[in-house]
Length: 504
RNA sequence: GCGGCCGUAGCCUAGCCCGGUAUGGCGCCGGCCCCCCGCGCCGGAGGACCCGGGUUCGAAUCCCGGCGGCCGCACCA
Image 1 (tube, protein in one colour):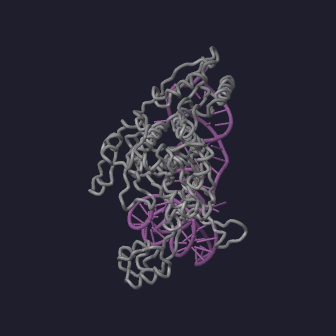
Image 2 (image 1 turned 90 degrees about the horizontal axis):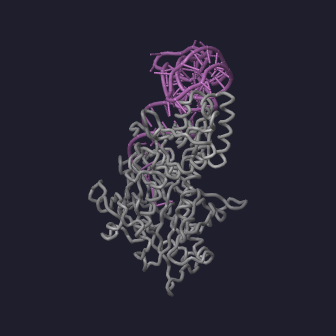
Image 3 (image 1 turned 30 degrees about the horizontal axis):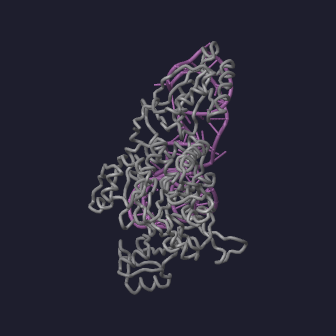
């Protein structure tokens, strides 16, 4: 492990090798926005594709949708985002700190429910609320909203205001009834979606960790509220041992998670229902599948104060980053029937569905992955030093480049053959070709960007048409005849655990 | 958003605090070596120093503003 790996090192590495670039960099960059470079774009696709395969295509009970980014404004009234996203900020005139006006008023014993700026201003004066840090005087409240506003149509009027979605989930709820009829699925079933979301964060930071534009991969899994513990799939994950940090332990000041199987956790009532436990398990299995070490993953329950307005119970799936400790990369929430109930209320449409002869408004379990955070965790997890040099030990399933092809020397006989092999491989796998510098340097450069296999054309190739195949993590080599090369690569990549030094 | 530190070629870095047109490394380009694991040999191209303004005969170097980065505070539905 590279202990010295800092976020700055990783950021610089990602820019240097073309995973990510600060967006609008030639103009100085835009805070909270990053563009994917060539390697990042490939990495993103691999992760996205595998997620979609694992959670949608492979399953019989989940279908996908792809919703709009600009959404009907009423959506966010119903979801509660306008309310709870629209807050007032007051600034201390002495020390300059910002505070949420509603928090200060609540501390002062005021019951805060949808106040206007004038009311907040009046209450602050009446109650004599001052800066909790230094006692300084507070500014007039300034509204801020975490949603990006835009205007639909030619006029910028209040009526034409719309928002860029701050979460993909709502599009699933809006389409719930249509999907239900069109797909002819019965409860329990899930709707998955991948897409961009936008949050006008006050202070984006930490490279990919807090962005203003990012991508979510989400499932809303709908269950009959009376059958939340009726989960026939539970056996798939029951024996998985997880590191579980409950709200209760946190409230006692304990940082050490329990090591417990999901079945035990459910039996002890630590998880809201069996379906909730199941989706925690499935999530972890997928993270492991793309190569993230479960040793560095824990499942932390939200304590009451951090629970979202819609949630019955939420678990953060956290990764232990070497440079910033435990941070959320995914959330698995029990949203109850909050969203469907609210949309039913605001739209006047009946969103209940049939199950066993009764009409029910389903409850929802929501696994919600932040793509960029998954990528950050995958990169941090894969970044290792092997014999003193950086190697990105990405699982071949997500590695942006699968194969590198080199001529042993930069001579026409070798380069001609090497390019021939390169083009043959490229038909099947993402591949790069390199003839510059020494063979050692080329191996190391390929290792650095996580290429699992390197193929070299040498003197022997010209005699018998065999090439060497070198393994990234062990540096071992085998010889393969070019006629069997593609098949051999497939075999190796599909059984990668035999060829890696990684414990996972 | 506030405070501290910072912003030099694709990347890292010296110089900046004692103002006078910029140091080194990596990478890159060309050539030599049938070179299997990053220090091989020869040659070469890249920067007016984040942007804008000011002070000055003259600024990367001082001052102001903006943008961006890191750390801390706040925020993180």
